[in-house]
Image (cartoon, rainbow, N blue to C red):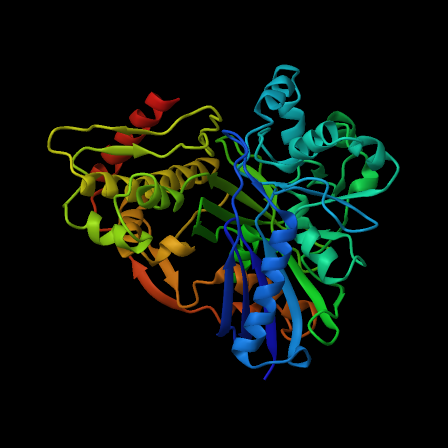
Length: 489
């Protein structure tokens, strides 16, 4: 039997998962790591802690599966995107904490660039909306604020990478400074039409090219790691959302998936067409298995499943995240309560970085169950706004939505999602689609799979949620949601 090792490095934990060649999950290991909040709006991770937790889960999952390095055909890496690391090429030490994708410290700088007229020019090259979310302004902040960093960067002493590059560097003991197209396309420094680092973007952000990793297809033999006891090819790298699109076997234009994680991320495959969204979405590189460019339309919701964590940790309304469905189901609806969880601003399709969260429509009859239900519904409302924007961009018709991520285990949420969307929402048998996508990319890169059709044939449906609400009722609910959004804007 052939096995593939997927490293799934996320925002709150590092995980390692072993799949067999049939796409079945064999073993898993997970380790949480610290979230660092130096001041309001700032979010950091310790890059060394990310690596140590990731490598610890690699060793743990091998032990759990009773396998040795010689049993693993390839390693695939998937990662939280946009999170920015700057390190010393000689000793591999980070110069500062990793600045996380959720971090808003460069908001004022983004405002400056908007006022100077750069936003449309940046979007034309990168497909991205000018926002602190992406890596370029984070990297500029590091170069401007870490003592001596800019001089050392110009001298070629430093390396920049998103988390995939950092892990590949560590796994290869400093031999590899690489990334793939899907991660490069999230930096706001990569021209997704020309498929290369863009000299003009680098000059606008004042970033030396010497810092940047080599960009390669997502499925590719990048190099080897010997740390687990024998040389294992590193043959797949992709940002988590593009990896989930791949793991959901969304290989043809019009196929779409939504991941319900800390945030929610909806991607629709657009093939070799790179659409220009008129509705607040971004264009991004999808996973590439060869030299041919592939694209997707994407909408990002900053607070998805994290709203449930807030109910647990902030409001103390529940003891465990899994309790939310039971609490919410004790009431027939939200009782007119609308919860807009814009704790870190509003993402797509609104893009209001300064928005604050709000709970609207409270009355004397409101209970914590109504608030819990409104919190769950907020995840579906935000995702519906994304899909409606995709439909308005009208690149391809969307006939179904494939879903994954932690909150996709919640049946009430998925039924409400189908009701709002008016199309089937489908949960697959293997919901670890992000890791599975990384495993498929690694398997394709090493010949375990002949082609993507072989991967697609393994995808299996677990549950289909079909719309049960009238379109008028769904439209009224969405109208109330948009009124609430207007209040927090």
